[in-house]
Image (cartoon, rainbow, N blue to C red; front, top):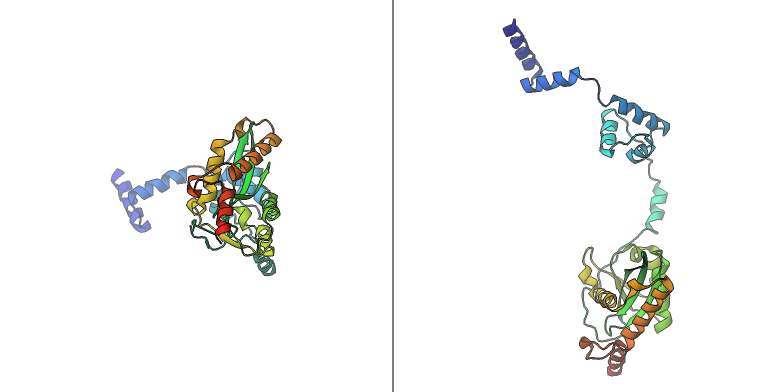
Length: 277
C-alpha cells in the first residue's frame, strides 16, 4: 500500500511537471486556511469605500490595525485590487511646464579667480541653531572681492528668504544687469518665482551640478568662517541672533583682512580692483 502511494505521487508529479519538493510545498499550503483573507477583507472594505481610487498609503492610514505597507501592496496585487489612476489632462500638463521647477547650466564652472567686482556672485542658505530653535541665513558673495553683498536672516524657509536677499542685494549695489549669480539646485533657486525675479533684473543664472558642493565653494567657505566666529548658539531670541549676524557681516566686509585678498578686507580689495580697471 505504501509503495502504491509513492508511485501515485510520482505519477502526479510527472503529470504536473513538478518536483517532489514542489508537490509537498503545494500540499502544505493547500491544507492551510487562507492566511491573507482576513486582512484582504479589511483592505477591500476601505478600497471599495474609495471607489477603487485608494492607493496603499491611504489604505494604511484608514486601517484600524497596524499593517506594513509591503503587505498591503502584496495583498492588493494578489487579489487584483488595482487602483484607478486619474488620467493626466494634456492641457494642464502643458500649462504646468511653464510653472515647474527648472535647473540651469553650470556657467560659473568653478572659475573662482575673478578680477572684476560685481560681475559674478554665488549664493546659498545655511541654518543657525539657537535656543532649541532654528534660524536660516541666506547670503550672496561677490566671488572677485569676497564681499557679502546681500543677505537675509529668517525664521522660516519660505520663498521670501531668497527674494528678500535679492532685494537687499539690489538696494546695496544698484543695477544687477548682466551679473551672474550661482547657486546649488535647491528648491528655492529652481523655483519659478526666483527664476523670473532674476530674469526681470536681467541677471544670469548658473547652478552647481547635483551633489557637487565644491561647485559653490566660495559661499560655503564664508558660512564656515561665520559659524566659527559667531556665538549664535548662545542667542536667546531671533532678534538677538539677527543682530549678531548683521554685526558679523559688517565686520567680515570692513574689518577682517584676508590673506588671499593681499591682506585687505573684502571692501578694500573691491576698491583696489575697481581702481585697477
